[in-house]
Image 1 (spheres, rainbow, N blue to C red):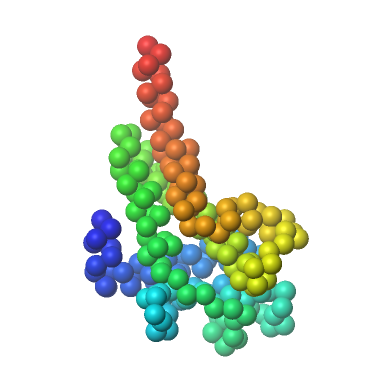
Image 2 (cartoon, rainbow, N blue to C red):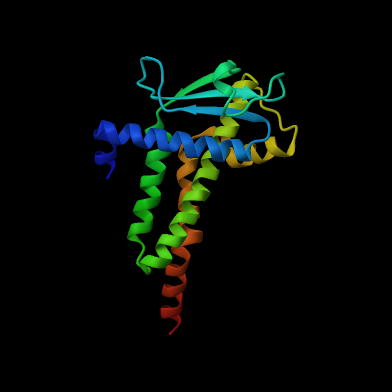
Amino acid sequence: MYALCYNIKGLQKGLAKFNAGIGQMVFNTLNPEVFCDFEAKAPPNPHDYDFTFHIYDLSKQTKVINSRTVRRIPGNKVILQKHFTLFIIPFIFLTALALATPISNKVKLIRYLIAVVCVYVIISLHLSYRFELVLTDDNFKVNSIWTFISWIGGLGGTYDNLFVLIALVWLLLIGWPLFNTITSKLEK
């Protein structure tokens, strides 16, 4: 699955545009202090980054920032990222866990869709923390409820912690019925 998504350029660009649209919608809905424009392309760079985040600190903007006006107003900061690393690999991990779970397909599909929403929320919290670090020049301070939530949910801004949270989401939403089934069979 990884090789299929990574090697087909048309599929890769389509997934980047899809994640830009959905990710921007989820991020901007959750984050009250920062507006971010997700762009499924990047300027030429030595690291092959293919995804651009234009970050707008809403407390420093005098103009109304939304998805229609954002292209005319320069952002406070710009971050480049590989969309494959940030979006696709976590979803492949979640999908592999879900496919390996032996529960009925109907239950699995419903819980998988709920888990996907949870993963977007987790990625949004991760990005919120990273964007706060960038906007404050690595001088992050918890000064509101939102910065506290993004500090907790961002888990220090490290990428590896995303997989721990994704495994926890899988366990709670998809793997828990499997765990209950196993424990009930052991009790008999």
